[in-house]
Image (cartoon, rainbow, N blue to C red; front, side, top):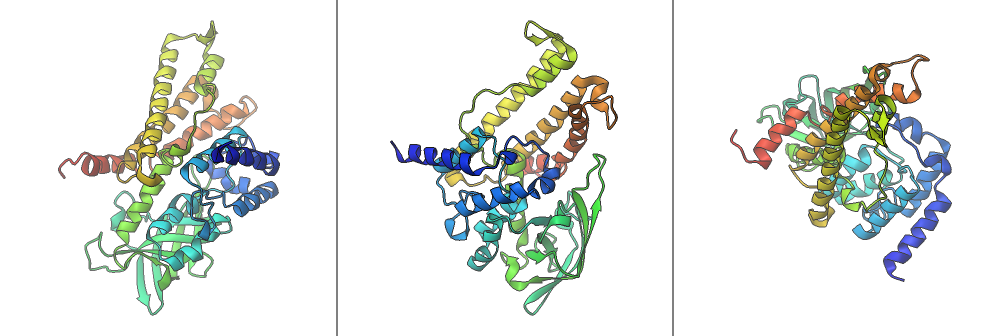
Length: 396
């Protein structure tokens, strides 16, 4: 028996014994993550996985990660998928600030912040966008003044996802108002549990409030929590966005995926259910073509993401090419939910009431939520600008 086979056998047995049944076969939108992870069985699952280091299986073990090589990480991913295990933790700590600190943070910053991400004890939010600095993020005006061993921060951030649940924020702040707008920005970390932080959730058309307004009035960030150099935070901030976009676009974890048994085509099943079926296939030719076109694009995207992830050196997140995947992935997500609602006809437009099934009501909310994915993490227009300039090398 090879070492990898032994690892797979041990991993399979451990997961079977330690993953609670309540944490299997769950399907939820990221907006519902806080409720899912507040469950008692979710905390048990998190504690067990954190003890193994498998909350962040490829991160260095000295910071609380699993220290697994790509082959073993792929096996763990495969075995978790086999039992449909819910990831033990989620959020911006794992997908955004954690990888950024591993690349740009000091040793002290890594020792202080990475372990709490690995054990799920600290939640993070992002302080980037402002009322006057969305697509043009470098126009941000949130001001930070260095006073001795700390920064005093004043300003407003908006669309801060999950701020009402977060313990810490990573933020871009202006530390030199006289420098060109891309140069006078710094990247800092600040504690959300202080008097200078006020959070106001924003209600969306989908009925949820995952986004917030965050007001910083003489809020404090430690000088030791400056990531990278003073006034050079734009470089750090851009790299973090690449980590974010790789997750939204499906690159994160793509290299770990093994071949899986063929799954049923959910959209094709919906088409048969709502528009009719003949000899095992969608009855209407026009509908059949729409479903086929979307399925082919989706599969091509998945295979391309997997290939690019495998080609990336040392499993590192690619650079500007992540904008391609963010753009295409966002459009696929939006178009997929739109097609599902279209297939359901008027049953796919229900908000509430006894005349609609839970699946139909969920479809409406997902359709509305999908509009946001083309905006957060950088709008489609921003991604196309990056692709044209940084990937294709077109003139300004």
